Amino acid sequence: MGETAFRCQAYLSAAESIAALVKIQYNKSMAESLLSLLQIEPQAAARLHGSARTRLLNFLLRWEAYPETLACLEPLDVNKRVSLQDLKAQALYGLGQYPEAVTLLQRRLQKRPTESAHILLARAHLANAEEQEALHIARQLTRAAKGSAAAWGLLGDVHLHMGQLNDAENAYQQQSKLAPQSRQARIGLAHLYHRRRDGVTASAHAVKAYGAAADSSLQADGSEDDARGPTVQQLQQLLDFFAAVGDQNRLHSINQLLQTRFTTELAQMRALLSTQQESAPAGVAVNANPLRPQRAPNRQHRGAYKAPHMPLERIEAAPLPDLTQIPVSAAERKALEKAARELFGFPGLLHAQPQIMACTRRQEDVLAILPTGAGKSLCYQLPAFMDKGITLVISPL
Image (tube, helix red, strand yellow):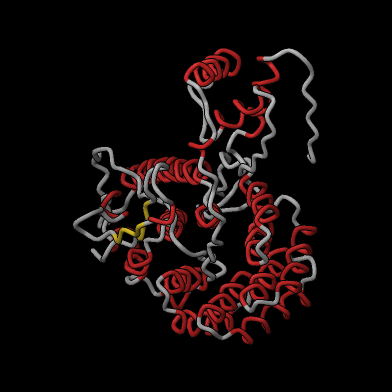
């Protein structure tokens, strides 16, 4: 069995600095490979029925098991089928073998050109520091198919990679017009505004891209469609973004969602392979024995977008005021916590909320700047419910 493809990172508890993100390189001694979790050998996987094999290979690619994907493709005559060449090219791209991916895709496109293969070729060129080649392909695609949102998204990614922010913004806006439900344009714009050091606008786009993240994006063949829900890769990109801006609430939320996605998909693949075992012809060995519960891979902050290949620069924030300088008596804190529990069902208060609301109830001036999800609304709602009088809220929303 090849080396496991999991490359995961873990962030420390909220009490510690997010700057202390640490990377954990998984290997055989630390985590089992996906094929071993499914108890199927590459040779047996290669002999699966076509649709089942495609679903398995898409599953492996989605969760970055690139060496295992190549191992499953090894027994097959990849040169005879462009669909298998596409899968192999994705695995080579994921492993960082960009020249090999370029060569394979160029040969594959001579047989039957498709937009998706051209897009992957452009991304391989871009990752291999061949920016002009990538830009040429992206421009050709947008001219040939002006209504293709994916082509405009590629053009935006290429311009962004090259530092051409205005051109990138125009491309992402065109992508958004063509596919209003697509999350990829908003992820690109979030990255773009982060590069412009406009954190508020960047976060707004990222939050909208996150959207109804509980929806599954899987299609029948095991591939993904971001119109149905955020893809695993998009969730990984958002994870990187929220790590870069220090939004620990969404870091936790997305990581939990990825854990759930993986557990669900693993169970679905086990069920599929169990069905294949029942109908498998002689010589196809699929081990469908029950497995002990396994921990899902830790899909936490990975450090850089997979597409586009650009690390997010962390913007150094100004030092925060020392909250210990804002007095909150035990009686004030107890009253606030009691009201939050009785009126809203919250078990406790978030960071800085007691200080902000204590100042508000004491009729002191206070300016609070909090990230999305940090509980801003409670800071005016709770004092309004607790005290007499009128509370005026002026919202830009």
